Amino acid sequence: MERTLVVKVTAGSDAPERCSQAFTVATTALAAGATVSLWLTGESAWFALPGRAAEFELPHAAPLPDLLEALLAGGSVTLCTQCAARRGIGPDDVIEGVRIAGAPTFVEEIMADGVQALVY
Image (cartoon, rainbow, N blue to C red; front, side, top):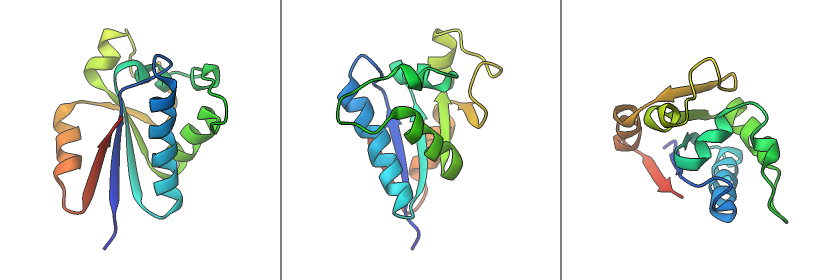
């Protein structure tokens, strides 16, 4: 049975270890063959913008731009609709490959058979 992992990251530069853990777990699952969907919510919403991941620094952690690139190439990355709106981020602002979607889409993803959801 194929496994799917949905990772909702709520932290950004405000909680760098938690943010890095979410991206690291998501990319590790992707490398292990899982289908991965990463949701950017809260302060992590800023990473949907070009160049923002490059500003993130955490000693002894994989570079966030590399993790994001891997997730965009092999999984899916979604920016929360409300989080985007609160930050004035529109569809034309985000990195190519990032979609903007809301709670109904998130719930649909996590309620499917064989899905594990994690929130960081």
